[in-house]
Length: 346
Image (cartoon, rainbow, N blue to C red; front, side):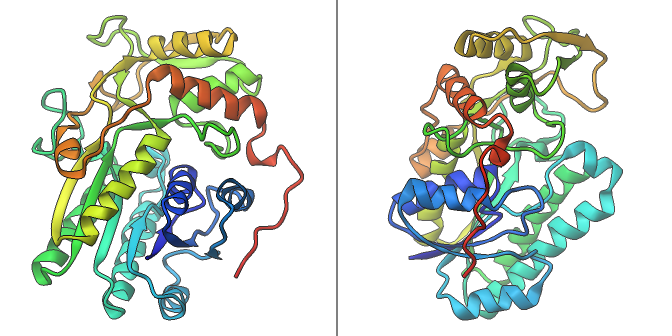
């Protein structure tokens, strides 16, 4: 069984590749390395003892996409590739719409040409926008509030329309909440370009001395300590969720959305406290104004994934922080820590 992984060199994609290889799947990776490093591919090989093909390309490059499908007997696709910064999407909306949506359309065109109609799509809880209530279930109305989230919501609709036109398509739409942590080996983890956009990578960079302090956006939300509450899940739990979703699309047809989260919300200050306990490092922080569009409380109702995919997050917040700290302390400069070996390109 050979699976194409788009964006497989990224944070979530690389962890999914490790789990897929360990589960006995063959994989082919396509990634333009715009938000990832070639070294991660070497480390995936080291962790699994298995090899795979890698194509350094953007999904907008339909010629390379066609070559990938003609040169490999692809059975299904897991689609991670896409730009992912909310703030950047507000500044550069056309770039986000072109890259995320056009790239997906070209991927689907080539999949259709080669008769590959099974796909797991990396969506996001941002499709819900400002939630009507919590916990958030898949039946809640959608209303993304920024271009990044709207690209995810639009792509979900594209897949639904595709299935209406051809019921042989089988699609799992995975709406992630907040992935954190790293592989417990400390060999692969999140390595954001520049200043991190997400809370935990920022906390870990403060702990290792790369950033001076954490900025906490608002402490006047209707929560236990006034700071925003989110649903954090371990990236390895999330990766395993993709395998469960892949198993589902391989044996069925139709389009289904699934929340991937723990169903538990933690505040910003609770996350700081948990990370300080695990790392033994003090995290200096400063309260500043809320960011426009931020919401107070957001966490998942994950029961549909449990009932239909036989998946549930099992790693707790302490393990998430321990694995993140192991990665960050072993790799203070991310994948640039060691002398890099060129990725093997086949």
